[in-house]
Image (cartoon, rainbow over all chains, first blue to last red; front, side, top):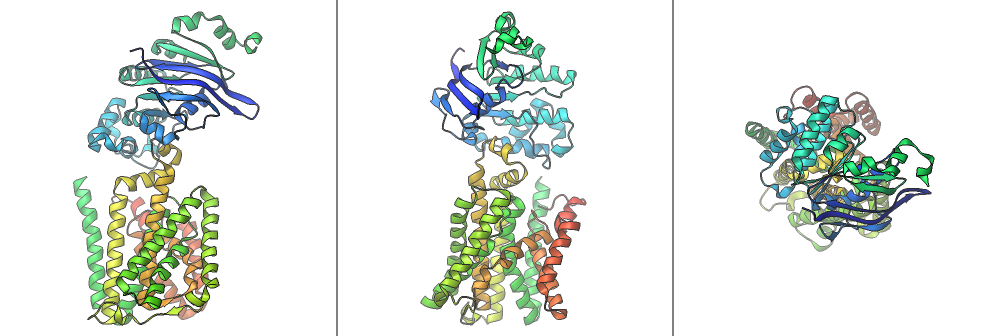
Length: 239
Length: 313
């Protein structure tokens, strides 16, 4: 269970003078739910964009299951098993829910319809398969986004602020869903809802100013003084 | 799902059957017009694959059409190649040029893509003029009449048979493509390229495939047009022949399989009618384009689909 599925070493990406991600070492263990937290602007989304290939790496390396994927473009990484769900919901609004998920099912998955319906059932949208995605409520669009991620049958599923904008009742259902994904899938979760993070994650990595501030279990992170300082806005935390 | 599939196939085969009957019973003048429409509809059907389904707004399709025109006309004129293999050559010429243009132009998107494709087409036009001794330039090459198209058939019959066959192949291939996995991914690229990339599809190869397919159709149409009507000229590479297929597709309904045919026929008779009244037929084309964009951006079939006939592919 302790094998590392996704590994980053010295990952760096600067935008002009802004060190968005600055020499990050990171290990994602197979089968875990790993949360990535940090203040706004800490580089979380940039970091996962480097992992998923949406943004090219400036320096450093990324390995998936021991294979170096640093030079692979995003679509090839998806095929290798890294799925990314967007922070801002990005579905095909003019296509049906069914067609949205059908596009995510990989060609080698066999029969299309069972695969699509399985993913839709998992996120509770099976009865809305024929609805046009753009007419779904926001919460349902988030679930559809997740369903598309699941249909890809990823080894690593990156969820970028998945509960943003969800009602509290929806968040509970979402947490149960994410918990049901492991250990077949490894989950990397960017999340601001601390209650959810502490509840769901087995390990947490804290980013601040593009660097890793701390990594550990929820209990360790809660007790970490540097993390407290960063979140409380202590002036020394920047140094 | 199955019933819908059957309905779609029956509708398309019925359209083809109706066209076949029309070609057989119409008087020669009208049958020739219909053959012209069908050949141009092949062009429009190909344009629709790139523009209607994949969202690639090219202003350079005249280049692929002209590649077909000359890909067929040159070997026929200079080496006496027989017409049917010449059509195949023209088709390949269109596809080949589309590959080359796509490899370069697809590094851009949106307005830049329009400009780059337009520039390629202009370069093609100027090249045809530059080699005017071979291509005939603006005056063009007049080829032996369609009498030799299919031995044993009258020119009119041969023209009808070839135009019908080209269109039937184009329509059915287009239907099969858009109902295939590639077709669904083409639509996905049009709707949301970034999402599609993050579902594991390479935008470049998908768009290149669509453009090459589109180029093959344009090439076949150009070759057919040149041979059926016995003329090849540099004018086929002018901007007008890039705008026309767009107009046909917009009028019939972008992203519908039968829209290009409908749009081609409608525009053909509109221009034909206008020509009886005025010489400013291009003005009619321009006004039609403006009115379409303003009042019916989804075209005839697109509007029907929106109003309830959702099964229209």
